[in-house]
Image 1: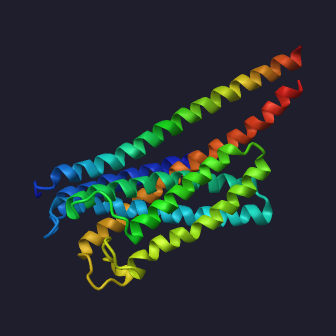
Image 2: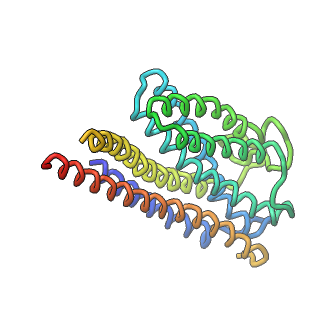
Image 3: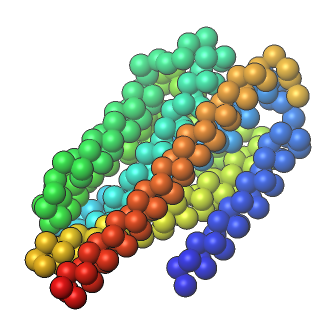
Length: 228
Length: 51
């Protein structure tokens, strides 16, 4: 059943991605000031939202780990954090390429970029911590605490463009109540691409969760083999 | 399409896809490694039980 859901979600994500790539490159016009490079936003922003949503899911799963001592919630937190890190990397890298053209520099230590980088590094630390602890219960508990403590950094990243007006552009989307709004046709492509990226991230998370279950099964088999 | 920034737009999309593809490849390799270890351990347990 889970395999069928995964294949269905992957197919929908694939179709949506193809449709969005067509819209991005062949349907939408160039932006008046930025030219072709503005199209990076259609992956840059969905990747950031996927990272943030992943961090939120990981935080909720981590709270469940601490309350119910659930290994399933621990598997979800670990899986979704890893996938979120991939999309966080996509967000940072595409942002740097865009900045090189628009700002003339690859990186600026402004509030949004710095808080995003710190959050990303903290979640990298979360995965390293998991590798360092062998005992499953202790690993689940310690990494859950780190995930919960790291999440406020993601909230700061989300609000940074409203709280501090530094190098990074301010909000341009209607849903964030922007004054200088993006064209509705461009916003539409951005939301559709977020859906495609999100579905793809869900598929990757399901695959990763299955690996975590296999790993737990392997731990049991190892103990059995050791006893024999 | 504006050709001035086209190359950097290409770099942006390329870096995004390459990052995702590298991750998917590592995910598939990890899956294969886990299955191999599972098969090896099951064989080891079966052999041990028969002995």
